[in-house]
Length: 248
Image 1 (spheres, rainbow, N blue to C red):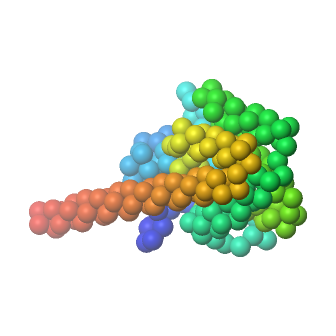
Image 2: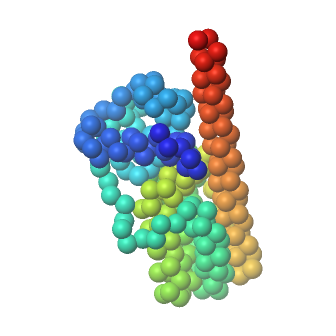
Image 3: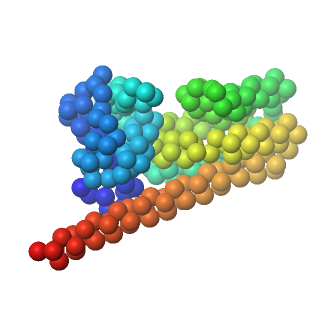
């Protein structure tokens, strides 16, 4: 299996997806358990779990606690979108959405502030459905782009969110990072709202930029962890091969 520069869990997610596409795991079927898949692919159960989270983010499977993991769709990525990395997209968001926030600060009304506040309430509810929280996050950013009052910027942010949600690798990366940063993300959105409420363009720009800076750093940290995990796995495989050879 080619792991190369891909993250290990993404490689495994790709292998499972091939099995779904081939019909071995048809829509409606239950995937084998974590232990069985871990043995099949020669990886840890943690890696299988991360791969399944990535596939669920793509809408290909549904993880049902106490029941198992079920195939829900074969799925197809959007062909009209450029193939970019999550890092490229986040860097672009830090520029474009920061300026959208600065422009919005000059136009925003009390009613629109209340609209954004309601979205943060949904995002900050620990009991909220994950899909509802993710949609509130999306609407928060799209609303700010709309309030900015420039149709080009609004279109660009809409396109950014299509890439974020429809490109498999990007969506998987965001799903993994956002799954672990719920508290930070909520606080950062609240800071953006506070700056908008003050009608302060620079503070709004900085708050949005800080949000993406922290997100970018989280992605780097996750990449480093994946690289170390893959290195440890490769080391263990080499050790086993050496021990097997010396026993002959």
